[in-house]
Structures are given as structure tokens and as C-alpha cells.
Amino acid sequence: MGKRDRLIASDAELKFFVSNVKGFLSSNLKKVLRQLESGEIAGARAAQVLGSLQSELEALGLTKQLDEIKKIYGKDLTAIVDRFEELGKKQAGVTVGPQGGVSQIKRSDVISDINRPMVETLIKGGFNQAASLIESHIGDVRQQVALSVLSGQKPDVSGIVDDEGESLDNKLSAEMSTTFAAFHRTVTLTSAEDLGFTLFEYIGPDDQVTRKFCAGLLERDPPIYSTEEISKLDNGQGLPVSQFGGGYRCRHIWSPVTEEEARSLGWKG
Image (cartoon, rainbow, N blue to C red; front, side, top):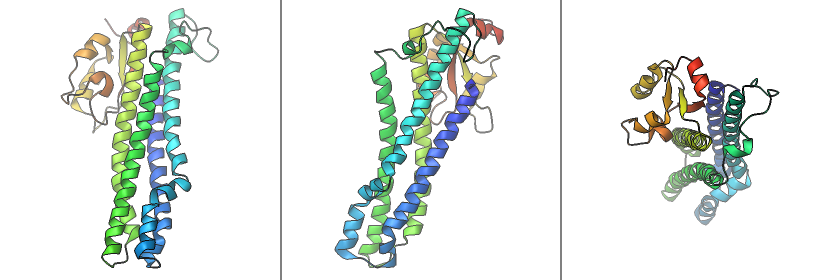
């Protein structure tokens, strides 16, 4: 899979995850809370249902939904390793591809033993972040329904769940895309430093919502930057460009290139 193809695939996987989680929560929250909406239960029984909402959803498969996050990170990590293995083949002067000979870079060397625990911590952090946002969403739904029940009204569960679902969609999409992209950039640059790569191509879309900062980086032909240059870039948001690119929700990544590959793209050095 090409560099840009993997970027597009990762974005699609994140959107699919968010859509699936939103759909899962919407249908199951409405199912669990329908007796409150109909007025069949109230008082202590209603409080019991609301109090056990999180565990009910977990029993219905919420944890399984969340486990998809780890799979997305795992695919990205594999793509990063694949890229360095490909670069190792180019350094060795062999044909690049599944049957393209032996790479100078072993797959086991891309993520060093020293860095592996931190990579695992980052993946766990991405998982926990999503889980926290979902738990907060469930709490918001619980609070809205509880207020209606306490005031003697039949709660509009469908309306509450749908409204809160839109808020969750926006928050989850924004936070996950930012955290995931930062993971990719950080692991890539850290591994590149360990393996001796100092040149990177800035890859991503150039459209109507692209920041001026990112558009400026993409204007360079080719958009290749050294580690030293990247360290001096300022996106104006107080966030390191090496990790966050243009800033919050940036859709661009740093892809390592060999010097020979860079020159073939027109880089002058």
C-alpha cells in the first residue's frame, strides 16, 4: 500500500469506527431506556436502570466495539514498519515489493526494545481517550433522562440520545484523529532517528480546509524537509510540528525517504 493510500485508509477506518460506535450507542441506549420513555418504570427502578447503564452497554458489546481502536493502531504500526522495510530494500539496491529481496532493515529493529513500551502506552492512551469520551457521553444521556424522570415527565429518550450522539460524533472524530495522527508522526520520526533517516516528505491533502501553514509546507517542490528543518518549524499553536503537524486535527504526516529517493523526486539538498 502506498504512502498516500495508507493515509486515506487510516482516515476511513477512524470514520468507520466512530460511525459504528455512534450507531451501537444510539440503538442500545434507546433499547435499554425505552421503559423509562414509555413510563413503564419510575422511581427506584428507573434509578437502578440509569445507574447500571454503563455495565448494560458493556454486556451488549461496548468493550468489543472499543477493541477496534487497538486494531486500527496495530494496522498503522504495521504500515510504519512496512515503510522502513521498503526503505531498507532501497538502500540495499533491490527491487521493492513483497518478493523484492532482503531489506537492510529488520522489521524487529523498526520499533526498538527501548521504545516499544512507550508505543504500547500511546496505543493504550488512544484507547482510554475514546473510552473516556464514550463514558462521558453515556453520563450526559443519563443526566438528561434523570432530570426528566425527576420532574415527572416522560423523557424523550430518542431525542436526547440523538442530540448527544451528534456531540459525541464531533468530539470523538476530533480527538481520535488528532491523537492517532500524532501517534503516527511520533513513532515514525522516533524510529527514523534510531535508523538514521533524516529526510521526510510532508504528505496529505491540499484543499479548501487545509491550513495556511500546511499549504505552505506543501508548496515546496518536492515537500521534503530534514529533521533539523522540522524542529525549527512553528505552526503557531504551541504544538511541536514533528508530532502535530499543522496542529489540532491536522491531516498530514511525515513520511521518511532515502536521500536517493528524495533526489529522484527533485530534492536538491
